[in-house]
Image (cartoon, rainbow, N blue to C red):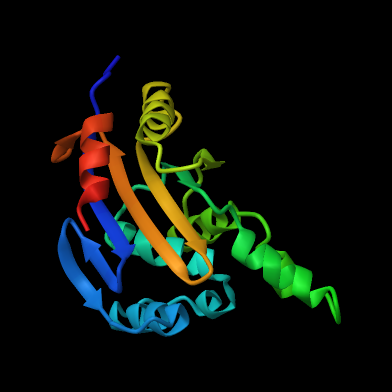
Length: 197
């Protein structure tokens, strides 16, 4: 049984920038998240009509995942995401909508794991997935969960990370774990890569 796995590649979306392996793919200094993420979608030439119906958390996760999975042929990829705010930003919008008319289009995004479904549909992923809520970025939990699924052959690769959106503040860090790659999949490396902004 292989107990050593590797991080193949990683992506960040924060501070007005989308990057892959530390290289900037898109940058826009606007403080308006909707404008920023729409610009990233267009610049990266992503074609997925449902994108514009998604909530902000799903858009953030979707773009970060798409950067990593654009040329990926494997579809047995497990997903393990985490954040601090859960779906609170969308929950507030849903609460406001209850004053007039509860919108099903908003309600469907009142669970944070909906973004996993959007990614899975786009990239035809059929493996295990989970979304966890922590007070802060938790490399140990991501490392343990990903390694467990890989060791048990529940997935060939894992897409892991942190995707947090609340009140216009956003932070995404996703990475792909596999049997071969650039960095040893350890909590030390996960934390190091997370800090690279």
